[in-house]
Amino acid sequence: MGKRYERDGRMPRAMELLRSMERQTVRPVYVLFGPEHRLRDALIDAICRVVVEPGWEEMNVVKFSGDPPECYLMCRTPPFGRGRRVVLCMDSQVLGGGRKDTAAAQAQDLLLRYLAQPSPYSCLVISCPVDRADQRLRVVRLLEEAETLVECGMPSTTEAMKWATEYAAGRGKRLAKDAAAYIVEGCQRRLGDVEQELDKLMLYAGDTKQLTLQEARAAGAARGVQVFELTDAVTAGNEGQAWSVLQKLLRQGEAPAMIVFMLARQLRLLWQTARLSAQGKRPATVAGILKVPVFVAGRLVEGAATIGQARLPAAFRILLEADVAIKTGQMHERQAVELATLKLCRLRVQRQ
Image 1 (cartoon, rainbow, N blue to C red):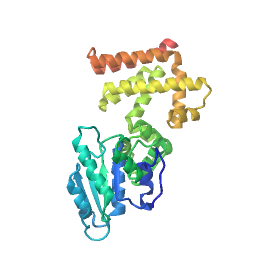
Image 2 (cartoon, rainbow, N blue to C red):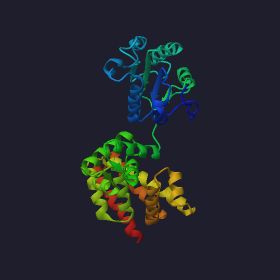
Image 3 (cartoon, one colour):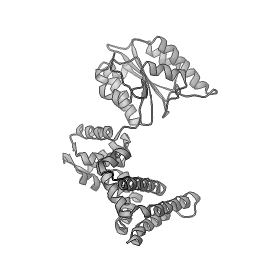
Image 4 (tube, rainbow, N blue to C red):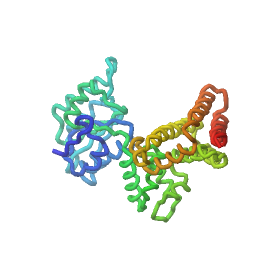
């Protein structure tokens, strides 16, 4: 048997399983769920590489939508050539719930019957469009006992940085550690977004092998980090820089309401950082508590000192007013975020 992963009981995480797939005894069934779709796709690809004989992928990887009984018949059909077959059931209702959810009940019944006697010919991979697994469901408990329920959750910062580094290396590029942290933080650890931003950075870098933090910034990689730069500018009272970054975000298609939300998130981090700094916590400790890269924690410490904890309530009020104005239609959304940005900058000026 393969290695047993302990996290939240018997449930293996997709990242752990992906890293060790080639060393694992592949199980007859995997049920995948969770919000990180890129990780789910990567795990499915890895299962196919391990299970299916090279050259037979077109014949021995079969995809179904939903939970048709035919997918279980296919599992019991011998594969073409050597090796085994992978049967994919996408958008399955097997983790659905509710007394009136007859589709989920039927899907669970089919799977439970199959689990009692799985086929030696196939690996059945079921992908469910849910973020959480309901522990009250009998099928969930049985899948956990069999260690075949796999959570495709958000990776840690370290895992996402490693993913980014390996993605770049696979394309002949060396990604600097601070550049990886910059992109991962800006994409909020969403792996699909990380890959898109890396593609943009590599296109900008051209034949350059080393991808640096300076190039990542110049390429405009990671809009979330640009919001971080907007926060830096408003906390410093730098209206010109804040206006420039804001207009760049708007030209890139970022929604004004999302900019307000992300500014509020950054200000909340500044408020938490100010409290931790007042307790004598160092940036490395702040990074661990807030679960951000150390270089981000350093910038948060500087930003909290710049704006001052006493000004943060006023900053939150400005963003709340902008959010209400956008949602109620009192003001055009672009005008609302521009006005809020200028007001935030002037908080710093008033403090001086």
